[in-house]
Length: 234
Length: 234
DNA sequence: GTCTATAAGATGATAGAC
DNA sequence: GTCTATCATCTTATAGAC
Image (cartoon, rainbow over the protein chains, first blue to last red):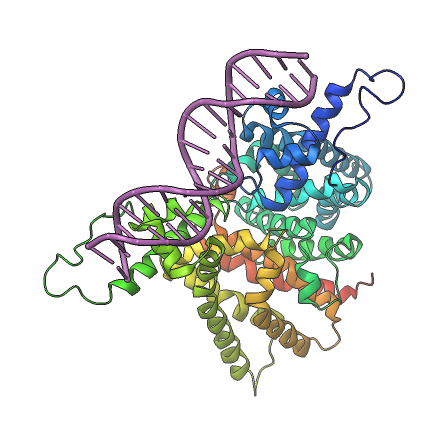
């Protein structure tokens, strides 16, 4: 975590591995990801990122340009993977129900959320940081809405359309509002802030995503059904 | 908003009003609140706050000390009011159901959330900023959990205990997790990020808290009931 | 590709005048 | 109480050596 300075790079064993450039680029992204996730964009300096990555600040600018471009690079790197995983998950779910038993609201929601929980559980610390970062951006008034839109809109529209198929009588404004509620819950859970640990005095742990899994899908599905059912008008 | 520099203070008419000190202190808090809400703690400099408030940076340090203490002062100012409003709201709800019809999960949740929606709708721009600020802190990994705990824990425990009264068979871990989901949805709605506006292409507006009101209570209540009902174990 | 050195300016905070 | 002036440090970013 505190970064071994010199690195066995051109001195190690065998040849300098020639891929050093790409490795350092990834190390910069890793360092930036972790620090941005913990302290936000303005809470981190390029010097700190450079120190954490074991390189000089100049190298950051060489690879990414301005600080904000580094941030966008961090954000973009995993967004693609995330979107593809979710699309694939929903493809599978829909295909499994093309004939035979009908899709359910809870099933669709599970297909939408579960890939993120799985990736967070199995993907390593980089993914943990990334989800914390996305959660922060999601709640950032100044430019958060725009950034989320830029990276994640398509997959959300896919969710809404599928739900519309499952519940044709549902109104779009209800679906969008329910999605808003869902994403607030989901992102807070994924960001593992430790809040629930102190609040519950040890009964719950924010790192326990299995506990999230067995509750969140049912919680959101019931919420959707309730709102759709009462056909709220306002 | 851009602040009239000189202020008709010691030069106006009549005597200097003697309360200038307190007024400026509030103006600093107002300016800091708005800017912290939009850009976060590290995204704002004391100089920017001073400029927005129409005072010098030295005055900020005179009143509040270090920058972080200014932030805490901003956070504390409205937290008390908020907590009292929520406690009062739940007192009323419980008193109304002391005899006669039983309390409901949706009723308790409404008593817990509705004061915030009302204050946001009627309280003016300062409150809007404040909610955006709280939402940001709520999703801040480094020190957000601790800050939320420090300012808002008691009223949350009150909610959980009341829900436990309404559903005695419910387990605490379920109640805490459901609260976590609830607060994620609520805070995102209150922060009015504009995300739902672009996502829904104009069908929904994040400033439309009336739309939140007619959906969020039912959504959360159904979620709670569902999780409690299936008695999740994990 | 990667680092050294440094420019050019911003930052939080304080001492002291009024 | 409020401002002027200022310090010591840190900031992003670049030019140029290796």
